[in-house]
Amino acid sequence: MAEYLVLIYQDESADTDDAAREKITAGHIRFAEKHGPSLRGGNALQASDTATTVRADGSGGFTITDGVFAETKEALGGYYVVEAADLDEAIAVAKGIPMPSGGVEVRPIRPM
Amino acid sequence: MDATVEAAVADAHRREWAFVLAATVRVTGDIDVAEECVQDAYARALTTWPTQGVPDRPAAWLTTVARRRGIDVLRRRAAHDRRLPELAENAAATADGDAEDIEADGLPEISDDRLRLIFTCCHPALAPEAQVALTLRLVCGLTTGEVARMFLVQESTMAARLTRAKKKIAAAHIPYRVPGLDELPERVGTVLDVVHLVFTTGHTAPVGTDLVRTDLVSQALYLARMLRTLLPDDADVAGLLGLILLTHARRTTRLAADGSLSLLSEQDRSQWDAAEITEGLDLVREALQRRPPGRFALMAAIAAVHAEAPTWSATDWSELVGLYDLLVVIWPSPVVALNRAVALGFAEGPEVGLKALDELATEPELASYAYLPSARADLLRRLGRTDEARAAYQAAFDLTDNTVEREFLRARLDELGA
Image 1 (cartoon, one colour):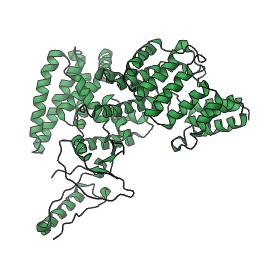
Image 2 (tube, chains in turn blue, red; image 1 turned 60 degrees about the vertical axis):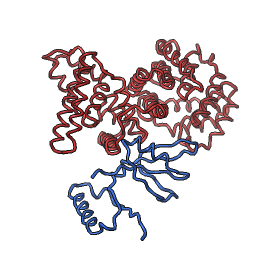
Image 3 (cartoon, rainbow over the protein chains, first blue to last red; image 1 turned 180 degrees about the vertical axis):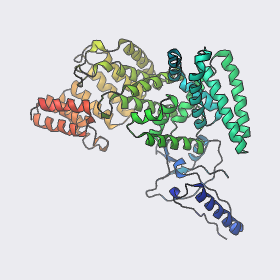
Image 4 (spheres, helix red, strand yellow; image 1 turned 45 degrees about the horizontal axis):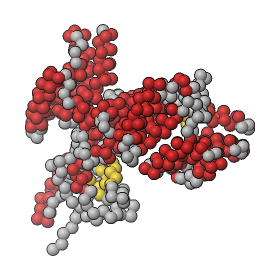
């Protein structure tokens, strides 16, 4: 058997009203019921405008910026799910991730 | 409405807003709720103080009212959401404990609360323009409309920017806390950048009819003084406050009687604010004691050289070049290099200055920076290269949006003949 990370992309401007969100949630519940044995985990993320990007500055420090990781030649290479008391603690952990190039995006997971 | 009461509420708003809000956020844990409750508390002061009299300690009164209201809001929310009761009870316990402090000492540990608020508003995970907007709204207590006017954007645009920033603080759990010692220097740096940006935006307004935006300058001075009280041992804070004071001391002489721009070389130095210069010079001396000196300490030292020179011709240009040499190492910005070239032009002559300036001609950051062609124009004028000077003044004129500065450049062009 092999494992796969399945990433969900959607138009954030399209799910702004409650009815649309409820419909999506109901769809995910049906999906999880149908494929339960195949699923190893999953989360909904907070909107992209809550993201923070951490990049190594090449001289031992880091730059922290508001917003998602804007890729140019980088590609998604892996992920960690981190439990932390707040964003500062999450960023402190994120700084420990090897990033010889690129960087990491810290995005809050939506509480269930 | 009693005018004395109205004045007392306005005074409490100006002096105590940050304290009251900061102390309320600690109880509610939510900036949005706290902001609303503090606004309510000020509104209640307007209706209550006329009959009950202005309290001895307005800040304590306002904080108590805002916190009680905050606890009510949390309890009401808890009734709708079973996850919240614990939060509401914790809040009530914190508020009760602090209420005793307020009764006993007048002011509890205010310094920490205001610092927490400042560090949250200036968190590096927020966009720089959001940091500035939040600081002016939450720490300085300006209305959204006032902040919007300061940055010449629509009120709805500014409201959206503030809402987005507060949403990120809540959703991403940006902490309400003073950073630990290991992070502190970097985080103080972000706060000082915000205050410095508010100051420079006000000192020479990028666009508009006024050269100086007094509203922004006085908010920057207020914030720098607050930081100085809260972080009295920080050399960078001392440096920034010194820089602001030494620059602010020249404010009344920057415009001539007819409203036109008056350069440092033409200003009446007897009109400079002597008290602010004395205070600024003390701060510069203190800030320079840290080795190596920080960016704001060096910028303040540069302002101090001008403040101490009895006349323009007595300016110590080689001292200035030396300070710019140090500054450009720790702050390698093309704008610093430009100022260094100008100082060099006075220390060693326009030829040398022009050579240093022309090395910056290809800097992308300076491509639309009007001070580059205007500095070049001045050096060319002094070298008698009139045609080139005229072209450079014209280039500067085309890049300038501030009316007072445009008039100055127009006058220079006229002097050189069409």
